[in-house]
Image (tube, rainbow, N blue to C red; front, side, top):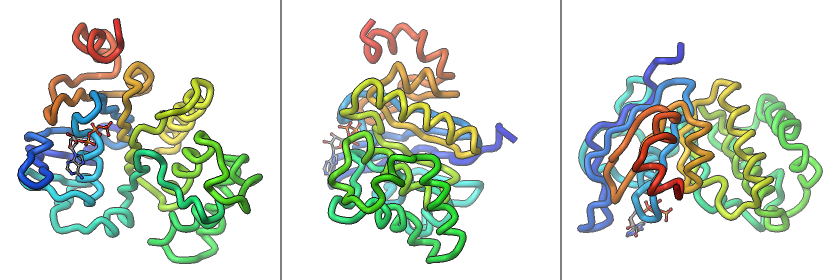
Length: 239
Ligand code: ATP
């Protein structure tokens, strides 16, 4: 059922040292949704994703995932429970093969016939990765590295996939391919939290969206509402 709450963030405050970067952020992500988070450089989008992944501590506020309080759940266990992040800038292991990168995505699951089966599925989804499975990840193009980063995350069997600027630095045709892949993942039942500077495409795809400005949520609504919002159009869509 679509309206079931998957992730609930309430009053989230996060800092780097003395500098507070997120100020009482409230965000809800329902099961099956694509939720997009847009905002300028430095607004705190990546910080929020890292806080959800458990890579950045939450100073105040609460996060619950499928009704479970995340405060005492370490980052590895969050991955095992289905919260999986694709980091900004892909961060594939450039000196490892494509296949080893994919297998590393499944490290929380151990080696099993099921993992091998999923590897096959991944290669069907991204045929270019099969073709290049013995190449070093560093030899792939930017778009292919993005697909590898997503494939690696999928090997962890995400329920909630956190995507940090997947379209960054990619040519328009490749961007379209990435966004199509995101739509497919939603169809497969994966819930998606998408951080993007490419606001028009991210909102067009989204069930709902949030605008983050210097660490605060300033606008929220359906993707459609945000696309037609005056302020969003001026500040983020260049209209
Ligand atoms: P970008 O698109 O540039 O990644 P963003 O919206 O994701 O922007 P964050 O990367 O979350 O923003 O950064 C939010 C703020 O925190 C910025 O002012 C940034 O300079 C600061 N910041 C980020 N990482 C650190 C860090 N490790 N130590 C100190 N300050 C940081």
